[in-house]
Length: 396
Image (tube, rainbow, N blue to C red; front, top):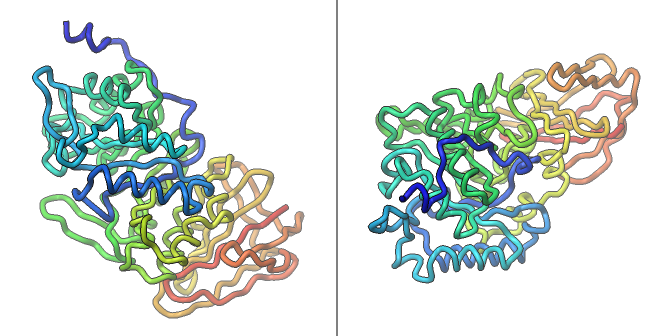
């Protein structure tokens, strides 16, 4: 009888393939607020995103992470915490939709969430039905308390439940890369985490206890090596949410963090307090030229071409024959970025594309300043401050 009520079926569905044709953009509550979430805070964040230029720049998802849960009712259906969300989740979803934004929520494949709230194990079809009734557009699905579960099976079960519920949902798989989801998840989720959680630092390793570790920005960048061939429209590698604007990174490190996520064709999920951020942070998060690199319709993840004197040279092929080039200074002190376009042709085996300035002359524009910087007829040379980037767009 319960299966009939839910409309559940053992037949497998498919993920909603028309979604996430470019990496999702939005905001998530965890990095700034952790479990301190309530409906008033979420409404205020939605108000800010709609009004401060982020919505106009392409951000669209407002995602509540862990700790929104109350208890399950007598039939097993999940309900939000009544003290934190007294109006109910449907009213909050409607409010976010009324701002022209989309709504995301969090659950876990195990019996409990990472914050100790009720997980979805054994309730996948119930939860998917509930989310559809609320109008949820995005689900982040975590991997705590999953003793004995196999990742591919657990995530496929929730994918099927979402498909059966019938309301289009972007499915964000937060399995931390343990079971190498890039090898099997293309038809299961729209994005999958490739590492443990990000930590708000430049280059560090934070031990959370047990087998759990969190990683600084630079370490997560390095951990993306070898994964780019698995990403593309509607199936993205996810190096975790942004720490931009959360106060522990320098302005240069914030800039490098954001620029590298754009080079990686990563989801751009802001994690700061949108209600109160300085103009510098807002300008970076809404930089239309950097965002265009991330959202490029070709959907190819960039790659590290060379490393010399602590400066990485990253390249990313773009639509219409353009290229993005990013010089990342890993060192604390300033370094010089140099590149001789004429003698260093670039071949991308994944995209089957060549950057050959000997045949084609490109115009160069600095994406942080918006200024033209000549053409590829001459070698490029520019100073890069410590823990910072110089990012360029080459236009054919």
